[in-house]
Image (cartoon, rainbow, N blue to C red):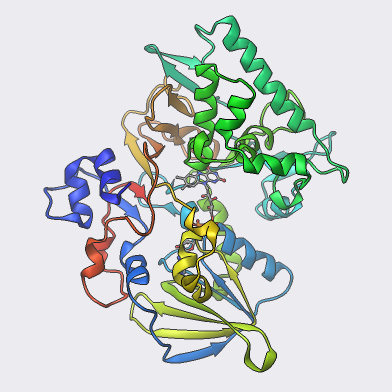
Length: 466
Ligand SMILES: Cc1cc2nc3c(=O)[nH]c(=O)nc-3n(C[C@H](O)[C@H](O)[C@H](O)COP(=O)(O)OP(=O)(O)OC[C@H]3O[C@@H](n4cnc5c(N)ncnc54)[C@H](O)[C@@H]3O)c2cc1C
């Protein structure tokens, strides 16, 4: 899918044209925020420049999204501060970035964090540091501060002219639908209960703690669709539920993702067979709160507006290292870093442009990698919708229509009242979800050799697009 198609789908032709794809009539009130496309296009289209200055630093982190920031935070906690984190944008966060300047802060992308269980010590350390864990329950599981929990209200679907509780459309389901639903969740329960010879779960976070038994990893060689077919899960309602889960978590459809990933969605967030999924933790700015906390701990090491353009493994005098070349997007200065190690936390698709050895010979899995485009819509309604009629989140069944989540609950829980106006966020995996670096709108790729990100490539409407 082309960037302009995505914008057209959400905003109509004027906005698509206004986002750098031609001349345009005025935009509707609001703003579009998002990653600046200029530096990315230049990275794709021009050969990497030569540095005018070099620095030596033991570790370079490429990318200041949650992955890069977490790595930086862990290094700092371990007492190691001899690293730099290079981020192309003027603010850290990536897909978990948040905006301010509306009625309340709002997430650009990631809204919530499924509450981690006791077996995720890394994330629990972070949440303890953020003061949102109150203690430990009798079952040994952490208990979370009420103001960050988004336990209620539950999801619901809109079908046949009305809302129905839950994600599975029970109304009108026949015997066979219900039998298949039971059988599906029995399968999920089987995986929740699964422990391998080393006592590891099949699906958990961090995924590095999950089982690598053949029984589990085989699921990675089968599509979710093929797994459903194999199990004879043919009920359209069940298929819709699974399709929704795949789109929700991965922006992909069951045909295009593995059974491992599909089952992960359903099984990893449950403590025990039959239990509800873990509650969700959230803040008005969504996971932007995590970003702010992490970034606050490594402020001195973060270099913003630095586009990494090349990563070159080196071997001077038998000592393996890596050179990283970065360009300032504010003044075009090119700086090189001689490093011992690099933590690469930029998106996968950028590997073939940034890693010199992969540019020459891209690994096979990169060619198969495709990315979904997405857009998050944050609207403010006055007066606030009635609480009964506006629950979190609501999903239109059997279409690819956007889902939405209301911030007012999160805001009230966080101590701010939003009585008269209520920011509401919708997000949607695009109906045909593929956008790659090669086929997105490149109208500004020809606008000159500068790496600077012109303000015109950052239009402002309260929609976040990527
Ligand atoms: C719409 C949406 C909703 C989501 N909702 C949730 C949710 O509710 N809960 C949840 O847990 N997860 C959610 N996610 C997923 C979550 O946002 C991501 O898994 C996570 O934030 C990814 O972090 P990352 O650091 O790996 O990658 P990214 O966030 O992609 O970060 C990569 C960083 O690298 C930078 N970068 C790229 N190229 C360069 C370069 N050349 N030089 C320097 N820097 C570069 C980017 O600017 C960016 O900051 C959502 C994702 C999306 C898109």
